[in-house]
Amino acid sequence: MLIVIEAVQFSILTPLLPALDEDLALGSARLGQATGAYLFGILLAIIPAGAVVARLGFRNAALVGLILLGGGGAAVGWADSFAVLVLARTIQGVGSAVTWAAAMAAAVSAVRPERRGSAVGAVLAAAFVGTFLGPLVGGLAVGWGRPAVFALLAGTCAVMASAVSSWPRAHGEVVPGRPTGLRLWRPPPRTSAAMMITLGAISIAGGARVTLPVVELDHEIGTANIALVFSLCGLAMAAVAVGVGRLSDRFRPRRLVAVGAAVSAVCSVFLAYVAEPVALVGLVIALGCFVQVGMTAGFASITTENANAGLDPAVSWTYLNLVWTGGFLLGNVGPSGVAGVLTTSSAWLVVALAISVAGPVTLLVRRPGRVGPSRPQTPTQAPTTTGEGS
Image 1 (cartoon, rainbow, N blue to C red):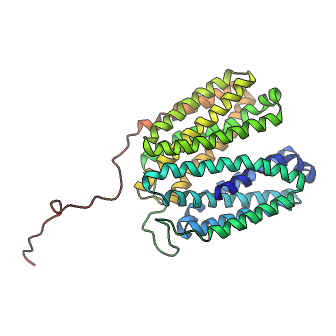
Image 2: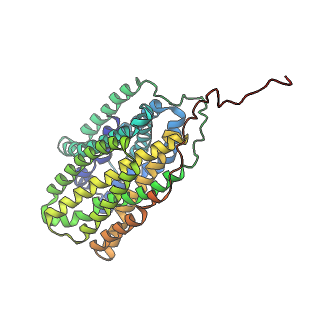
Image 3: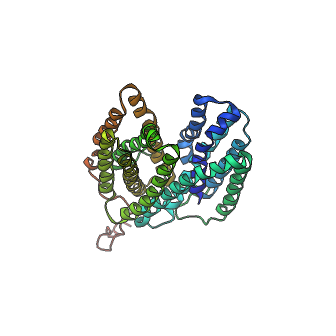
């Protein structure tokens, strides 16, 4: 539920953009800046968020995140200028970074090691459910008014904060003021670092999926149907996240990552040449689902590798969030720039090339022996002492 609330706050602004343009006289450039302020806040707080969660514990950090999300949301509701709107969305982005770090770290720490993939899949599925609901709530704000709806969301954050305050301490949670014995910023294992390269490329495809097809689809099926397509895609990706998370507990996640990367590259190639609306919609949905296959399996694998190496779960999520946010932003901006200079087909081919180059990296790096708690020594293995000279 915590991630659903965050995802609603993230995606709520899209249907409100025309009304904000009219109320605040923003113009297209400022509307883009207002939309990007949330992501800017996330980037600003990604690294500090891991340290906050590691030092305060999951529960206290989640409370901080909810306060920032609810307070920033209330400010969005009553914003009467561009500066206030951007500041409020940036504060929400900071809250988002802390909330995600706390939720993901709590989820993977509260389950047995063999169930981490399912925990990661459930958290990512909750995010897509919230992303589906956000535009619907934003539509209500158009009719009811921004102050009323964002006040309601702030109240929801307060109720959720009350629920979070009663969380039991999860296994492995940091007790505030007590040293953890972990090096907070130790580098991830080389297998995790290699997989982050692959996930960065897959994230580029995820970002391009949101921006590149929109103009062409708008001409073919209209704006309202585009919203329906991406809503259905979000629900499909939520289902994929749950299923792949469970599969990651049974099979090697690296193979699932490779499948996700390979099919995402193929979909990108087809998107470069397909213009028929029905096929285009199908490819957009397929790309979203296989991006999710790679991301969910990759997150599960990296979380497990980092935990086995003794890396704090909150800091592990910090690395993942950096990869996802950076790749997604690059996918939003880079392919669109290529399309502006060349063609949309060229942009999709660039995306396919990036995945084809980075995709195999995760399979090329050999996985080291499993790092975990040492096995207890048997009496025959224990060193013997004679006691002589004592």
